[in-house]
Length: 70
Image 1 (tube, rainbow, N blue to C red):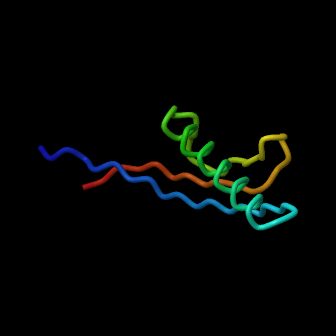
Image 2 (tube, helix red, strand yellow):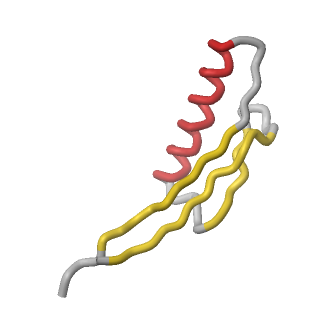
């Protein structure tokens, strides 16, 4: 019997605003690192999840669909 391959379908949509380009890039990168850390900690289930900045302000969503197949 073959082992099933694990799949993740992931969409991330962020809308980050900041006073200048350097700051908006840094804040966006921090949000993406936070999503990656949560994913590695198995904190996400299938579906949409709100994404917030470091102050708790909503800045977007992340969608995950975990599946397996051949």
